[in-house]
Length: 318
Ligand code: TXA
Ligand code: MG
Image 1: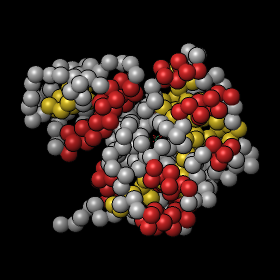
Image 2: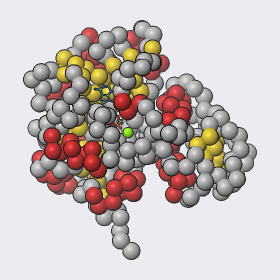
Image 3: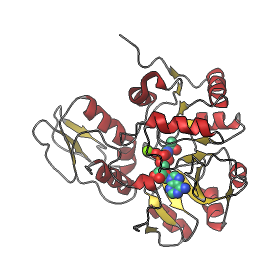
């Protein structure tokens, strides 16, 4: 049998140097981050960015997040402001992505931000991607390492299941600590949350002492926020207590039942644990070929908001 996992590499210095050689030559590698695994390429290189889009089969209108090692390297590419400085000092490195105005002199490929006058920037916390960034002369554009619309990967094996050998190298950083994507905040005007994610918007609100409105407009500010996404490819039903015939049930908190089709996001009812387990459980259910997924009501607060946002998108059928 073919070993689909043979392109998974331990994050040794030697292997990180190999990853550097691949991206230096315009290739793509999969890297761990604390949120989800990313499919990374040289953010300055058009051809490399194009490879990400074709591997993911990502709609070309959807811009990518660019990953930096520090604030100084962000300043070269984008205009920073007071809110950015406050937030970045408090929450970065970490699961927060900032939308900033792009500088005219920026070397970031126009394909990465789809020719917009803004770019999405993030400083990840996971130590191996930081090690890789620190030996590179450019930032890494990296969307989540899954095929467009499908489940996000939280282990190196998930990435291999998505892409097989079409990605030469997957750096194995273990299970992602946070498990859902970064929170995206627009800082080009009054701060607005474009995507709920690994850092609760409530924590940001408290820290900035402002009410953060969710972005609601007919103009799509963040194209990744429309249509079916995060999908296991089978129907998802939210706010349910029972599975459908042939379906699985995802529960949250202490429950008295136990069955082969029941999966618990967090026995202790902790939203952080639920976020960490979320994509893995959806993938297990998908791989076991259940016909549908019913999900208990998840409290719509803190990281529960990010989970519910993803469930809603995954249950949206075009
Ligand atoms: O945690 C994460 O953010 C992961 C890891 C790998 O860092 N990355 C990730 O990337 O989730 P992706 O491409 O799957 O999601 C990027 C989101 C999309 O919703 C996209 O529309 C939005 O960020 N985005 C990117 N650039 C933007 C921009 N200039 N303005 C508004 N939204 C932008
Ligand atoms: Mg994604």
